[in-house]
Image 1 (cartoon, rainbow, N blue to C red):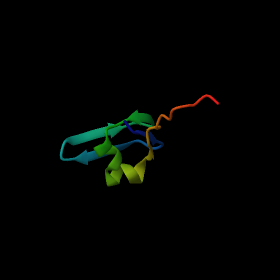
Image 2: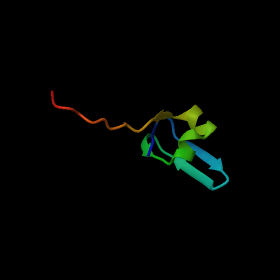
Image 3: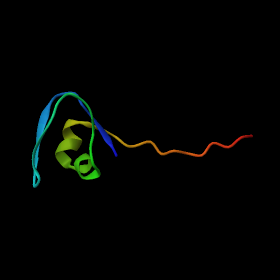
Image 4: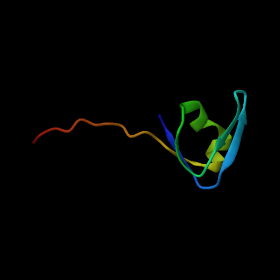
Length: 56
């Protein structure tokens, strides 16, 4: 799941209703992270991809 970092609290209103985001880090689903309003008001942090480490 992606995370967003909110510096200034905001309210997202979409088809699902209203959702308040306080300042701080939030784990959200992909649809929320891709929403244009969230993109404008928060920093979206993509989930880290795990890579296999090889012994050498």
